[in-house]
Image (cartoon, rainbow, N blue to C red; front, top):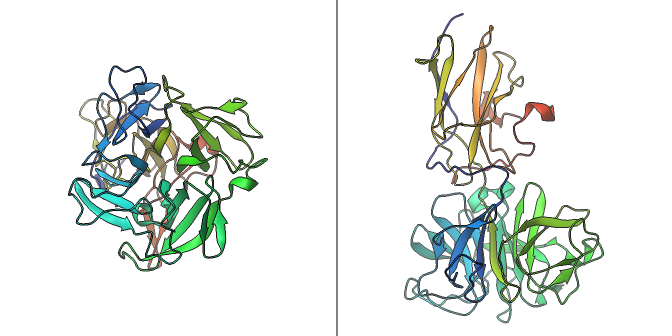
Length: 386
């Protein structure tokens, strides 16, 4: 068999994150100082990671000036976040003007700016309304995609009243655009039409979208119908809506009922790998060594290796679903025929991109294998590198 060294350019990589798969990675912030049994308080200006029943020893994000954070979203780009405030403030001088609760701010690795100016967009948010949940629609452009928001009270915009449990979509009018270059699209999640309907006295105070499901937290104990989970969801319970029924997405261990989960974000998207190198193994005769650059997104927790037959560019199937030592290197036994290899970043919910293929002057995304058994992770989230 002819041995070659291949350089497959996929996508830019910046950071590698390892985690135990099968455990939800969430980022949460409380409305009051809260100790969920970890020996120290999480403050309303802190966002802490929760994974598999455990909390991190330090905050992942802290808003300068110690304001109460009212919504949070972790972006794909390392060190970048979206967030909103409970009351007007300038982040202890980090902003040149006060942000209003209807605004969305961006932390760009310690540089703070206005991302969404609620009072000056098309479909302006009334001054009385507070953005208390935010995330981006990854499929519409990753970190630069559409914004999905929720408000703390019934909010009338352009002749439509949105309930506190509704989610509302805004899209860019200019790309990349400024904080006023947004336009209301309409309701994204109609709480009244979800199952038997979420009552209007329930407020969604944190939300995200992952693996085809809408993830929510409520401000008060709530009964949601139909449900495959508990009869009543309490603070500390994270709820998922799959389009048919509600279910328990995760439980924040030790979270006291007196404290609201005032802000919530799921992990970022898996992203893309930039470069794959393929060569002879120096450890096992006959094996191939694959090494690659890390994903461009903070949402990559692991990597999977796929192999297909050269010339049949949709023939790839999984041959190794884990980067065993988190070292961006794996050994595989080669096929007898000429083959191509792909390395795909993933987490427990989604795979990232398989890279783009070029044909007839057009780049298109390589597909997942058609058979579910040939995939390492069933669902996929394709996003541009930030």
